[in-house]
Structures are given as structure tokens and as C-alpha cells.
Length: 203
Image 1 (cartoon, helix red, strand yellow):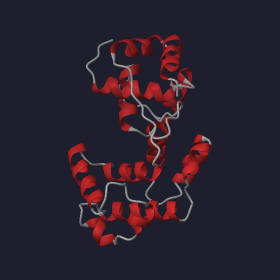
Image 2 (tube, one colour):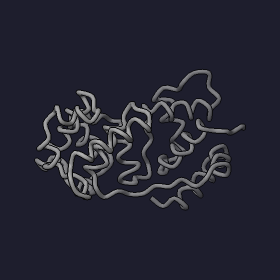
Image 3 (cartoon, helix red, strand yellow):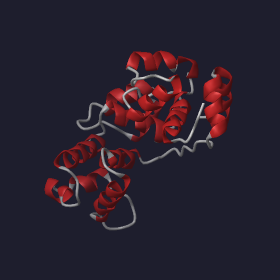
Image 4 (cartoon, helix red, strand yellow):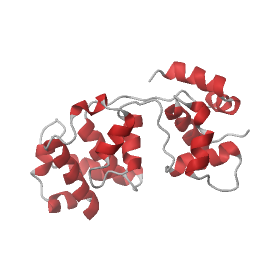
């Protein structure tokens, strides 16, 4: 994703988006190479405060000696109860095993980044525990894909509500139509909608 080119495009495409771009800092995206690690971390961090998730995630990594991140095979050597013991919920422990199995069996491989966005979402959501939102975050923040717009994300919904001056949270159809001018850089637009919610900003 070419951030500079994308920001120029968004400024030209939408006056209101241009104001957000001028107000807030330039976004940072860092493409990751360990896809297994990215998905496991996403599962750990789901529905937890940053501090709690950070603690649990470090305990999870401490299960494995050495400096290298555990491989799928390493994770599969740990029992469900061992994963639970670091603070993971029953479901999250099972989901992490499911992800490890998917990588170990080559259902998901390192060449997943050669697939189209829709194909990646389909492949990842075939793993029990990996939903559309997790797959979209993977596309945005791990694979650095430029045109992802997660319509189920609460922060994006709140951001678009503020952006459009709505009394209620928008539905998916309204969101998709509103975001159409931002294609093919909806990932960047999403980042600014998140920042709008964090504030402060006044139109």
C-alpha cells in the first residue's frame, strides 16, 4: 500500500476526509511476515483490554523456551489445559489450537498473501474461531492490503456516524455506499475514522 499516494487520492475524493487527513497524523502500517503469529495474537487480544491481553500473551509465549516465536507444531505440543493456565479462555485456547492445526496441515500457508482479499477471508474463516473481523484485521495490518472496509467493526461504525452526522449507528449497506468514493484506499479511510472516534475533532 502506497500511503502517500492513498492520502492524495482521499484528499481529492472527499473534502471531509481531507480535513481528517490534515488534522491527524500520518498512519503507520508495518507488514508482518509471520502470519501464524499475527493470527494467534489477534485471538488473544480479542475482547480484552490492552493491558490484560498483553499479560496473557506474554505468558503464552513464556510457555515456549528460546527467543523464537513458537511454531504451529510447538503450540500443538501444549495441551488445552496448559493454554488455559496462562489466562486464555476455554474458547480462545481451542481457537489457537485450531489455527496451529490449520498451519500444520498446510490448510493455511505462508503463500496466502498471493491470494485475493476475498479468497483470504474465505480461507481464514474456515478455521473455527477466526471470523470475518479477524480476517479483515489480518488483511489490513498484517498483509497491508489497501482496500479493506470492516463494516462490522464498532469503531468504524461510530466513526462513520460522526463523519456523516447521524443520530444512530449506520448499517452495513449505508457504510458500503458511503465508502465507495474512498476505493481503492478504504483501509486508510478506516484508519482515519478510528482516529475521528478517538478525537478530539470538530467539524
